[in-house]
Amino acid sequence: MQLANVSSRAAARVRLALLLTALVLVVEVVGGLWAHSLSLLSDAGHVATDLLVLALSTFALGQIQRPASARRTFGYQRVGILIALVNALLLGAVVVGIVIEAIRRLQHPGAVQGGIMAGTAVVGLVISLLIARYLQPMRADLTVRSALMHIWGDAWASGGIIVAGLLIAVTGWLAIDPLLSLAIAVLIAWSAWRVVAAGVDILLESTPPDLQTDRVVSAVKRVPGVRDLHDLHIWSLGAQTRAMSAHLLIDDQRVTQAQDILAEVREVLAHEFEIEHTTIQFESLVCRPGDVFCVQPDGHPHLDDAHDRMTRRVAG
Image (tube, helix red, strand yellow):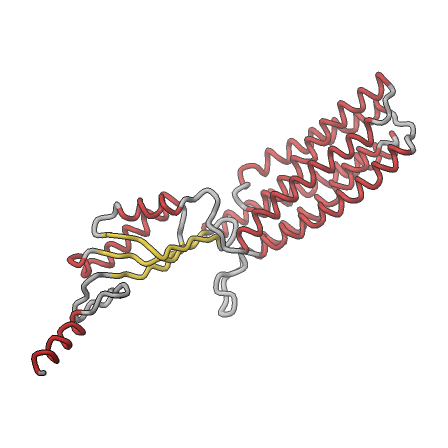
């Protein structure tokens, strides 16, 4: 329920960001054509992909709220990850287009109206900053974070275009327009790479980068009755949900209190590491008949087995 509420709030913010981004696109296309500025048109191309990104992000956040099914037992949390990867591929295509056009402009420079270029970029910068501030509280979601990276890229690009437009107006140095476009392309490529890296980490079920497994083990071992935590696996189901599986070795004298130990361990995992979904198998060095929650580590015989072997030796 909490995940659904977060996704619902994020979707509402992304929808408003979508409308504001459409406004930025219109302003930059008109201003870029009027000023004959490649950097403005390049950023408009970036903004056009932002529109698609935000539309896909809205769709993904809607899918996340769908309940799990018998086939998809973890639900649709990773739809957002797939959308983020598609966003990154779109950014890569934009980068290629900008680089090709910038090289052409460097070889064949054209007149650029720096004042119009700077004024248009100011409008784009203000709107981008408003969108970024509005989305910032939801940045824990990778879908929102990938969209936010686009928006921050727009903001930095607009700032650079303002400076470039003023320089063109004052000095007449036309080469700065395609050069700035190349800088924008590098910025976009870096943003795309960060999104790809985060998405691939989740799809490969890597340990979340802000978690250290040794800290998790140490925290769990502080729970009374816990001797060790091993065969530990921690991964992300989606951008907001973490899962863990492990074997928990408990004191022989505390086997009957396994449920209480489990509750305390889950409390530690949830509050200190935001791990809500856990699968934990108990182990004990000595298991007695009727110990329901006891599975022994390899190499440690059950008391019944040891008793049977002893009985056979005596009978022999």
